[in-house]
Amino acid sequence: MNNRLFCVIPCYNEQEVLHETSKRLKEKLSSLMDRGLISKDSRVLLVNDGSKDSTWEIIENLHKSDELFQGVKLSKNMGHQNALLAGLMVAKDMCDMAISMDSDLQDDINAIDEMIQKYSEGADIVYGVRSKRETDTFFKRATAEGYYKVMNGLGAGTVYNHADYRLMSRRALEALSEFKEVNLFLRGIVPMIGFKTDKVYYERAERFAGTSKYPLKKMLSFAVEGITSLSTKPIKMITGLGFFIFLVSIAVFIYSLVRHFTGHTVPGWTTTVLSVWAIGGLIMISLGVIGEYIGKIYLETKERPRFIIEEYIADSKDEEIYKNNK
Image (cartoon, rainbow, N blue to C red; front, top):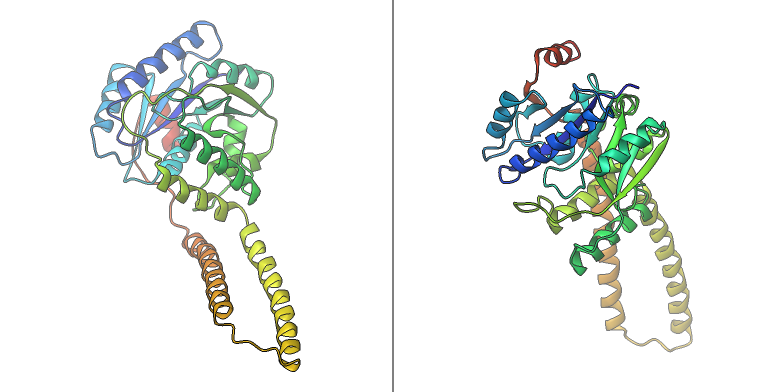
């Protein structure tokens, strides 16, 4: 069985948690190696996404002390999704499978065992899905579950209660590399790949240390990014709304004529004002949605790089593979 595993971990200002994360991952991978579930040359690939703290220095020290750890340093902060993609694209030429996860230890690393089992049974993509949200506040739980429902309702096609904790085979990673869009939303792109998929359910823990890099404002921005990057359904909804308003306006026009010719015309200041505000609001919202799509088109036509790798630290064998595939 081909079983070289790369754990890809995006890191942004994670100095508070990185030592504990590396310790637990080393224990987990060592256990998997001892049981013959993964090869002895499996690696943990830590991607520094332009951190302003000592994250990169910690990654360098981890690599110096143990070749299990490798590091990718991006030239600047590119955002979580781009950092994750950078790590996956580096790993794809060297691994048989890659598992992506966050560095905050909220994803249960014990689920890796079952993911590998699913991979050995033929799954190219295995999604880590939260079984419940008991550790979340009511507000966090309500907004998160609503987030997935709205995303899927508007055509984003995400896996419910799944973030970025997943296993992908090398074949799936090769397929992912064919997606060239600049507006990146991996939670929606990965399900488009196809191949055999499976799910592993786990309970998400509290963040070990530090603060969340995804507050409500950023989550809302992330949702808009996902919807407008993957679906044209909002545009179709606006078109449908436009036709509905047009039909209503015809009805109002006929009603006004009847009232006029029967002598029952009454000055309707309130109705007029409300109508103007309602239609004006709909027009502004519609222009905003269309503007989002135009902005996406603008960025896509520029074809800017999604990430720029400043440095890759690994053993000489993997560094050679990386250089040959750049």
